[in-house]
Image (cartoon, rainbow, N blue to C red; front, side, top):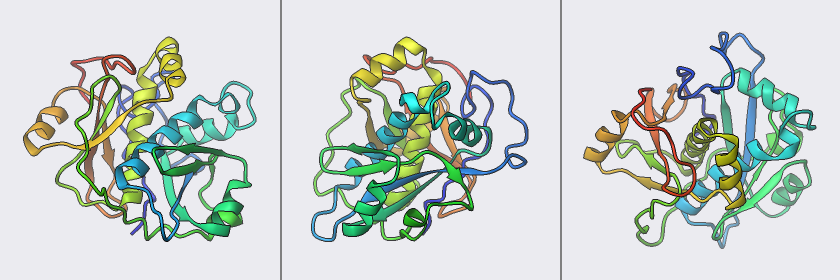
Length: 252
Protein backbone atom coordinates (compact mmCIF):
# COMPACT_ATOMS: atom_id res chain seq x y z
CA UNK A 1 0.00 0.00 0.00
CA UNK A 2 1.31 3.39 -0.94
CA UNK A 3 1.76 6.50 1.16
CA UNK A 4 2.11 8.71 -1.93
CA UNK A 5 -0.46 11.15 -0.70
CA UNK A 6 -2.00 13.80 -2.94
CA UNK A 7 -4.66 15.88 -1.20
CA UNK A 8 -7.28 17.66 -3.23
CA UNK A 9 -6.66 21.39 -3.64
CA UNK A 10 -8.83 23.29 -1.16
CA UNK A 11 -9.82 26.95 -0.89
CA UNK A 12 -7.14 29.38 0.26
CA UNK A 13 -8.54 29.37 3.80
CA UNK A 14 -7.74 25.70 4.39
CA UNK A 15 -5.21 23.85 2.27
CA UNK A 16 -3.56 26.65 0.33
CA UNK A 17 -1.20 29.08 2.02
CA UNK A 18 -3.01 32.24 3.18
CA UNK A 19 0.08 34.21 2.17
CA UNK A 20 -0.55 33.57 -1.54
CA UNK A 21 -3.48 34.29 -3.76
CA UNK A 22 -5.61 31.63 -5.38
CA UNK A 23 -3.20 29.11 -6.94
CA UNK A 24 -3.04 28.24 -10.59
CA UNK A 25 -3.93 24.72 -11.66
CA UNK A 26 -1.74 22.64 -9.30
CA UNK A 27 -1.43 19.87 -11.89
CA UNK A 28 0.06 22.28 -14.46
CA UNK A 29 3.04 23.13 -12.27
CA UNK A 30 6.12 20.88 -12.03
CA UNK A 31 5.38 18.24 -9.42
CA UNK A 32 7.48 17.89 -6.27
CA UNK A 33 7.24 15.63 -3.26
CA UNK A 34 8.35 15.95 0.36
CA UNK A 35 10.12 12.69 1.32
CA UNK A 36 9.86 11.33 4.85
CA UNK A 37 11.63 8.18 6.01
CA UNK A 38 10.66 6.38 9.20
CA UNK A 39 13.20 4.16 10.91
CA UNK A 40 11.76 0.67 11.31
CA UNK A 41 14.23 -1.79 12.78
CA UNK A 42 13.05 -5.41 12.81
CA UNK A 43 13.38 -5.95 16.53
CA UNK A 44 12.31 -2.61 18.00
CA UNK A 45 9.71 -0.74 15.90
CA UNK A 46 8.06 2.40 17.28
CA UNK A 47 4.43 2.58 18.33
CA UNK A 48 2.08 3.64 15.58
CA UNK A 49 0.88 6.91 17.10
CA UNK A 50 4.40 7.87 18.14
CA UNK A 51 5.50 7.48 14.50
CA UNK A 52 2.50 9.43 13.19
CA UNK A 53 3.00 12.27 15.66
CA UNK A 54 6.73 12.39 14.92
CA UNK A 55 6.06 12.61 11.17
CA UNK A 56 3.76 15.59 11.74
CA UNK A 57 6.42 17.29 13.83
CA UNK A 58 9.01 16.53 11.13
CA UNK A 59 6.93 18.38 8.54
CA UNK A 60 6.67 21.39 10.87
CA UNK A 61 10.40 21.28 11.53
CA UNK A 62 11.09 21.41 7.80
CA UNK A 63 8.63 24.28 7.28
CA UNK A 64 10.23 26.33 10.06
CA UNK A 65 13.89 25.59 9.33
CA UNK A 66 15.90 28.65 8.28
CA UNK A 67 17.11 26.75 5.20
CA UNK A 68 13.47 26.56 4.01
CA UNK A 69 12.82 30.29 4.39
CA UNK A 70 13.68 33.45 2.47
CA UNK A 71 16.91 32.79 0.58
CA UNK A 72 17.77 29.56 2.35
CA UNK A 73 19.25 26.67 0.41
CA UNK A 74 15.97 24.73 0.47
CA UNK A 75 13.64 27.70 -0.02
CA UNK A 76 13.28 27.42 -3.80
CA UNK A 77 12.42 23.72 -3.58
CA UNK A 78 9.89 24.46 -0.83
CA UNK A 79 8.20 27.14 -2.92
CA UNK A 80 8.08 24.88 -5.99
CA UNK A 81 6.56 22.13 -3.86
CA UNK A 82 3.90 24.36 -2.34
CA UNK A 83 2.95 25.77 -5.74
CA UNK A 84 1.91 22.31 -6.98
CA UNK A 85 0.06 19.52 -5.21
CA UNK A 86 1.26 19.09 -1.64
CA UNK A 87 2.63 15.58 -1.98
CA UNK A 88 4.26 13.71 0.90
CA UNK A 89 5.63 10.19 0.61
CA UNK A 90 6.62 8.07 3.61
CA UNK A 91 9.15 5.29 3.14
CA UNK A 92 10.81 2.99 5.65
CA UNK A 93 14.45 2.14 6.32
CA UNK A 94 16.54 0.12 8.73
CA UNK A 95 20.20 -0.59 9.35
CA UNK A 96 22.48 0.44 6.51
CA UNK A 97 19.55 1.91 4.57
CA UNK A 98 18.78 4.26 7.44
CA UNK A 99 22.44 5.28 7.76
CA UNK A 100 22.66 6.07 4.04
CA UNK A 101 19.42 8.08 4.15
CA UNK A 102 20.67 9.96 7.21
CA UNK A 103 23.76 11.05 5.29
CA UNK A 104 21.63 13.03 2.82
CA UNK A 105 20.66 16.65 3.55
CA UNK A 106 17.61 16.64 5.79
CA UNK A 107 16.44 16.74 9.41
CA UNK A 108 15.88 13.83 11.79
CA UNK A 109 13.09 14.33 14.32
CA UNK A 110 12.67 12.00 17.27
CA UNK A 111 9.59 11.16 19.28
CA UNK A 112 9.19 8.96 22.35
CA UNK A 113 10.87 6.18 20.41
CA UNK A 114 10.19 6.94 16.74
CA UNK A 115 12.72 8.50 14.38
CA UNK A 116 11.61 10.22 11.18
CA UNK A 117 13.91 12.00 8.77
CA UNK A 118 12.42 14.64 6.47
CA UNK A 119 14.16 15.85 3.33
CA UNK A 120 13.74 18.97 1.20
CA UNK A 121 11.28 18.46 -1.67
CA UNK A 122 12.49 16.61 -4.76
CA UNK A 123 10.98 16.31 -8.25
CA UNK A 124 8.36 13.58 -8.43
CA UNK A 125 10.53 11.63 -10.86
CA UNK A 126 13.90 12.74 -9.45
CA UNK A 127 14.35 11.00 -6.10
CA UNK A 128 17.90 10.51 -4.80
CA UNK A 129 18.96 6.92 -5.37
CA UNK A 130 19.34 6.26 -1.64
CA UNK A 131 15.68 7.17 -1.08
CA UNK A 132 14.17 5.85 -4.30
CA UNK A 133 15.06 2.26 -3.44
CA UNK A 134 13.40 2.37 -0.01
CA UNK A 135 10.10 0.55 0.43
CA UNK A 136 6.78 2.35 0.78
CA UNK A 137 4.89 -0.75 1.92
CA UNK A 138 5.45 -2.50 5.22
CA UNK A 139 4.72 0.39 7.57
CA UNK A 140 2.21 -1.59 9.62
CA UNK A 141 2.60 -0.50 13.22
CA UNK A 142 0.53 -0.96 16.36
CA UNK A 143 -0.05 0.93 19.59
CA UNK A 144 0.79 -1.52 22.38
CA UNK A 145 -1.44 0.22 24.93
CA UNK A 146 -4.40 2.63 24.95
CA UNK A 147 -3.56 6.24 24.22
CA UNK A 148 -4.16 8.99 26.79
CA UNK A 149 -6.73 11.65 26.02
CA UNK A 150 -5.27 14.80 24.41
CA UNK A 151 -4.53 17.39 27.08
CA UNK A 152 -5.66 20.28 24.87
CA UNK A 153 -2.61 22.48 25.35
CA UNK A 154 -1.37 21.72 21.83
CA UNK A 155 -3.29 21.06 18.62
CA UNK A 156 -5.07 17.77 18.06
CA UNK A 157 -5.05 15.99 14.70
CA UNK A 158 -8.33 14.07 14.71
CA UNK A 159 -8.33 11.07 12.36
CA UNK A 160 -11.39 9.89 10.47
CA UNK A 161 -12.72 6.82 12.36
CA UNK A 162 -14.19 5.31 9.19
CA UNK A 163 -10.84 4.87 7.44
CA UNK A 164 -8.40 1.97 7.59
CA UNK A 165 -5.06 3.49 6.59
CA UNK A 166 -1.57 2.07 6.83
CA UNK A 167 0.76 3.80 9.27
CA UNK A 168 2.64 5.34 6.35
CA UNK A 169 -0.52 6.78 4.84
CA UNK A 170 -1.59 8.08 8.25
CA UNK A 171 1.82 9.71 8.74
CA UNK A 172 1.43 11.56 5.45
CA UNK A 173 -2.10 12.66 6.35
CA UNK A 174 -0.96 13.91 9.76
CA UNK A 175 1.80 15.83 8.00
CA UNK A 176 -0.85 17.54 5.88
CA UNK A 177 -2.83 18.42 8.99
CA UNK A 178 0.21 19.90 10.69
CA UNK A 179 0.93 21.95 7.59
CA UNK A 180 -2.61 23.34 7.53
CA UNK A 181 -2.16 24.37 11.15
CA UNK A 182 1.15 26.05 10.36
CA UNK A 183 -0.40 28.07 7.55
CA UNK A 184 -3.09 29.36 9.90
CA UNK A 185 -0.73 30.93 12.43
CA UNK A 186 0.92 34.31 12.84
CA UNK A 187 4.71 34.57 13.02
CA UNK A 188 4.50 35.02 16.80
CA UNK A 189 2.32 31.91 17.22
CA UNK A 190 4.61 29.90 14.97
CA UNK A 191 7.68 30.86 16.94
CA UNK A 192 6.08 29.97 20.27
CA UNK A 193 5.02 26.57 18.93
CA UNK A 194 8.45 25.93 17.45
CA UNK A 195 10.27 26.85 20.66
CA UNK A 196 8.05 24.41 22.55
CA UNK A 197 9.10 21.60 20.19
CA UNK A 198 5.82 21.48 18.22
CA UNK A 199 3.74 19.61 20.82
CA UNK A 200 0.65 18.01 19.28
CA UNK A 201 -1.63 15.02 19.68
CA UNK A 202 -2.94 12.47 17.18
CA UNK A 203 -6.02 10.41 17.92
CA UNK A 204 -9.00 8.78 16.22
CA UNK A 205 -12.27 10.64 16.69
CA UNK A 206 -15.48 8.95 17.79
CA UNK A 207 -17.99 8.77 14.92
CA UNK A 208 -20.37 11.36 16.36
CA UNK A 209 -17.59 13.77 17.25
CA UNK A 210 -16.07 13.35 13.78
CA UNK A 211 -19.31 14.58 12.21
CA UNK A 212 -19.24 17.56 14.56
CA UNK A 213 -15.62 18.32 13.74
CA UNK A 214 -16.07 18.23 9.97
CA UNK A 215 -18.86 20.80 10.24
CA UNK A 216 -17.08 23.07 12.70
CA UNK A 217 -15.11 25.27 10.30
CA UNK A 218 -11.75 23.92 11.47
CA UNK A 219 -9.08 23.04 8.87
CA UNK A 220 -9.80 19.73 7.14
CA UNK A 221 -7.44 17.52 5.12
CA UNK A 222 -9.24 16.04 2.11
CA UNK A 223 -7.51 13.21 0.30
CA UNK A 224 -7.77 13.00 -3.49
CA UNK A 225 -8.24 9.23 -3.32
CA UNK A 226 -5.26 8.17 -5.44
CA UNK A 227 -3.91 5.65 -2.88
CA UNK A 228 -5.50 3.32 -0.31
CA UNK A 229 -8.74 5.22 0.33
CA UNK A 230 -11.60 6.91 -1.50
CA UNK A 231 -11.60 10.70 -1.83
CA UNK A 232 -12.76 12.54 1.25
CA UNK A 233 -11.82 14.01 4.62
CA UNK A 234 -9.09 12.31 6.62
CA UNK A 235 -7.95 14.72 9.34
CA UNK A 236 -9.47 17.66 11.20
CA UNK A 237 -7.10 20.05 12.96
CA UNK A 238 -8.27 21.42 16.30
CA UNK A 239 -6.18 24.16 17.90
CA UNK A 240 -4.60 23.98 21.32
CA UNK A 241 -5.25 26.18 24.30
CA UNK A 242 -1.59 27.14 24.71
CA UNK A 243 0.13 26.39 21.40
CA UNK A 244 -1.26 26.69 17.90
CA UNK A 245 -4.63 28.34 18.58
CA UNK A 246 -6.72 28.15 15.43
CA UNK A 247 -9.54 30.48 14.39
CA UNK A 248 -13.02 29.14 14.91
CA UNK A 249 -16.20 29.33 12.89
CA UNK A 250 -14.68 29.08 9.40
CA UNK A 251 -15.83 26.67 6.73
CA UNK A 252 -13.58 24.57 4.51
